[in-house]
Length: 177
Ligand code: ATP
Ligand code: MG
Image (cartoon, rainbow, N blue to C red):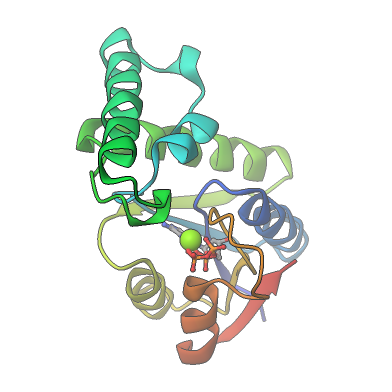
């Protein structure tokens, strides 16, 4: 009955838990796992630093990360603004490199848990739209995602992406706490 499970990961701890559940089910049902990551094109400097495995980055990519942190904090200081309002975007190459690391780690974890077939999609755009489209095109039996993600705003039970996806998904959607 469960043939294809779509797991959405932003590299957060919640998404890791979602992946663990999806991998467990995938291994037991011999289901195909479709992993999706939407590039973190708006991520803050601290978020990227937390997600990156620095030794897995090239020297140029490490420099990009350091320079982005400097630019980001310069803008915070200049604007005197709350960090949430800073708009300086991270370099694309850095976001792609970190996306690759997130997906590599996810693929390894799924394979280690016994999943036989893992398909990976790294895409760009609105995360909820991308997850919904891929769930439909891959005929997913279910979507598994974290209830929250990378945002450190703790007030709400669901993040905006998990809220939109669970409201609009055509298939079963599990949000993992
Ligand atoms: P918000 O982003 O609304 O401020 P948040 O980051 O805590 O809050 P969400 O972004 O909704 O919460 O994250 C919930 C789940 O959605 C994540 O655990 C992950 O499964 C999925 N998700 C979020 N962003 C992405 C992304 N860029 N790519 C893939 N999956 C994502
Ligand atoms: Mg988020």
